[in-house]
Amino acid sequence: MPTLLVISNKLPLANALAEVLDPTQFPIVRLPSIAHAETLLSRGGIDATILDIDQPNAQSLLLIKELQSLAPASPIVVYTNSLPPLWENDAYLLGVERILHKPVSGPIINTLLNRIFTPKHLPISSTPPPQISTPISTSIPYHPEVQGLEALRRFSTLLTHGLDSSALLQQFLLLLREILSRGARRARSRPP
Image 1 (tube, helix red, strand yellow):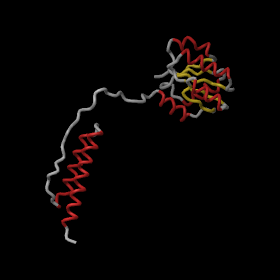
Image 2: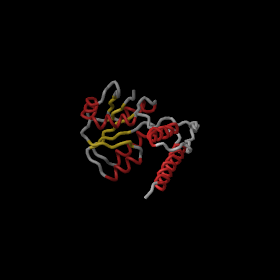
Image 3: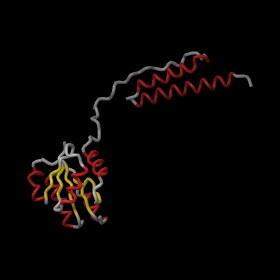
Image 4: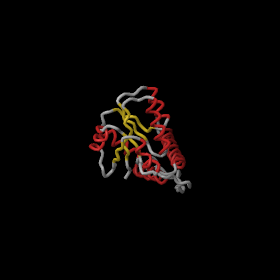
């Protein structure tokens, strides 16, 4: 359960966040300044910080920089009333995860926090998946009454290569070539 630090010297933002966030999923600690939060941040007691910035300016960039130095692994979300483009660029370069506009939108902040705290990638194994090689027989004689079932059986053998894309592609191309060559042979053998 990630703990959120809300740094705001005004109550409306913290109250709005408390209304839209589930306290069992995202407990909130509200403090008026970074100076009050130094101990929590330096000990790693905070998983993400929400920073309330009314007037984006050089001083607020210094706050972001200080916050980033205290807890470099902790994502920073900024709420602001206005957003000068150059300030926004500098804030993102300093490590801000996202900049949101006031007022607080419950669906947006919940979606953002769920994205931040959900693993982005499943662990990737360093060993390649085992190759299951089921060769497709190309010597099966053509019988019109079982053509549909035979084609379905052949395509189902492709499913064994689901984790190995190169083997899947190779077997698919072999099967496609066989089907096309059969169609061409049948077309040549028919009388005009």
